[in-house]
Length: 318
Image (cartoon, rainbow, N blue to C red; front, top):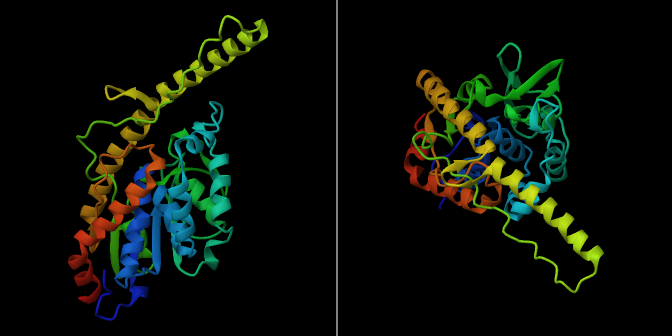
């Protein structure tokens, strides 16, 4: 891509990064491709996974985030799932938060080189909460707390959950922060009517039965190991789904929420439309396939290329 020939005032441009689970890695490609044509929004509003990528961009750490995303493997993702049924969600999120802290410098939102805000939802009164001050990663943690999946986050005396419940693509927040031109990225517009696609990453290693000549203790050890492996496989298959006709628990939870978020975002953008709407084509990507980041990033870049003329017109017409 070549840079836009016209002068661009990036201080007038805001970008609203929407929710969408693993599809959110495409935000990285979108931001990179925009930068290559001279568009570097100075106002960033993010919801859920969009808040995470927006935080990386607003703190000039997008390249570090991309490196982490492209290095993720399925076994890494499973290892970050600290399961619990006592904290209001299947996953506590502490391990994931620790991972993010390793790749994003801890800082306050007010100190970032770009204006940033994340959207969350007050669990008890249902109000939309704009997080524009305080610890950056705490704001991200609140925004990504998908109900039923991640435990809620307590901040300033309120229990907060995923902002996608109230504003999946935060265009209005972008405008409230001063953006005159808003580029929105929605990740769910092509999802309704599509079949849930459970993750294809299922454990396929089988524990072999011990040879008859092995000692008794070896047999007992292998039997115990086999039993634990089978239980782990059964748990994972029930959570993530084991066939196209049997979506797992996480697919059902997140898929249902994203159908709802699609309806909410359509309604909100009808009343407050962005100047440009980008919709990466990611219906083939499973909701929990975080290890396929390179595919999502590439589609984010491709989406900008497809919409390039409209983008350039929007940012230079005023």
